[in-house]
Image (cartoon, rainbow, N blue to C red):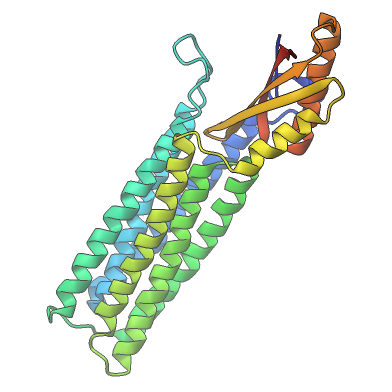
Length: 305
């Protein structure tokens, strides 16, 4: 016997409904806010970088402007994932959000390559830095703009369980560190160290690579159906705590923002169908309580040998 319940369909099992449309609107607002904020920040830095000749600030400006394109990718991912399940895609298109996240990761790595090349070029003696006071103001704008955007996206991403939005928030947080690195380089140049700006650019490159690795591995974990071991342990323990269940086996995977949990349990073969169905509903309630992030829970009953 199979019993399926979820936060979208399964109120009879005692699960709390989720406002999926509301979550998508919140995600789209976060993406739109990010795009506008980073466009303003990046353009301001770009103008100042051209005036000062700061390679650290220039790399940071292009990095911020590239984030505007990643915001578009994330927006498209959320739009595509809205489509309902069909015979061709029985689980829907929730994973479009994760695929959009790969676009974010690609932009992060491209930014790292660009920043590294420009920093090495200037370190070898190509170019100088001037108007340091204006450059410091530009770097400060970059720090503040990215911190505001990152905090907003991270808050929304955690609330709606979106790995893509969380990854994009980490990217913006990285940009704040990137701006801080550019600021440090300009301060070093002001102190008489010509190499301060290109060295700051190299430091920014390392930060970009670090966050790029984190975002890529997190998304890869999702796409390969990886979950934290505690999810399986808690699901099996919750199901086994229900009277009448003698043994359980759980599987789980993420599809976009949806955590799907499948519980296979063994029960007394002499139980009636109605009694087994009642046990299944109690199992779903118990698993939902143990794993509030789960949005789709499937129960399969097996006769104990």
